[in-house]
Picture (cartoon, helix red, strand yellow):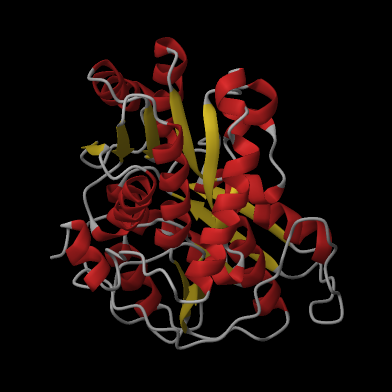
Length: 358
C-alpha cells in the first residue's frame, strides 16, 4: 500500500460484535444461502496476522449465518486492480478488501456503484464512494500497552521494532509502542527498522531483526505481516524476545513472543458481512479502537502462553504487569493519558513530547 495521509472521521456508526465465546444474534442477520462474499487478500493465508484474521472472521460468518464466499489472492499491487475487476464480475453481495492498494480499489468501486465494498482494516484516503465502508482501527493505544510491557521486561534497556514500511499507518503502531517503552523505562532506547514495503518475506524480517538483536536490542515489536514471522525466528535463534501483532501470535514462538498487540480484523470482517446481510450497510469510515474491543492485548484474551513457556524470571513478571497494564488501560480510556497518534494527529502534544511530530 502506498503511503498517504488519512483523514479519519467516523461518519458511520457500527455496533462492534464481540466474537470470542458467543454465538451470532440471528435476529439481526438471518441465515441466507444465497448471500455471498468475496475476500480479496494482498497475500497468502498463513501470515499469522491480519490476512489470517480476516479469513477467520469470514469463516465464522459462514458458520453463523449460512452465507457462502471465497478467498482470492492478489499479492502484488500490479495484480490488484485486475483481480478486483474480475471479482466484481462474479457479483458477490460484498467484496471485502483488507490491505489492498487504495487507488486500485477506489477506481473499480467508482466504476461499479452497485457493487458494495468493505474494508475491514484501514484505507489511507480522505473520502470514500457511496458503495464503500471502511474500518479505521486505531492501534496506538494498545501499542502503548505493548511498549510498556517491553520497557518493563528489557534487560539491556534497548528495544526495537521491525515495520513493513515507513508510513503514518505503520508509525501509529511504532510511535505508540515507543511512548509505552519510555513510560516504563525513560532511559531506554527504541530503534526501528523499516522493510521498504516488504511484508511477505520472513527472511527479510529475520535479517532486520538479527541486526537489531545483535546490536543489543533484546525485545522487538514485529509489525510486518508475514515478514514478522522472521522476527520470531531471529528471536529464537538469539535467545531474545518479540511482541506480536494483529492476531494472537503468542503460540507462534512459545516462550519467545511475550504478548501480541491485537488488531481484530476478524471482528470487522465479520461485522461487514453481518451488517450487509441485514441490509444495514452504510458507506463511510467507522472508527474503532481500544474502547471498542477491536484492539487490545492477547493477555486480555486469556493468553497464558508466555507465562507457561517463557523463562521463569520473565514469566514471573507477567502477573504484576497485567495489573499495571489494566490500570494504564483504564487511564487511557478515561482520557488521563494521551497517546501519540501518527495517523490521525501527528502534531499532538503527545507526539511533540515524544519527538516525532510532523
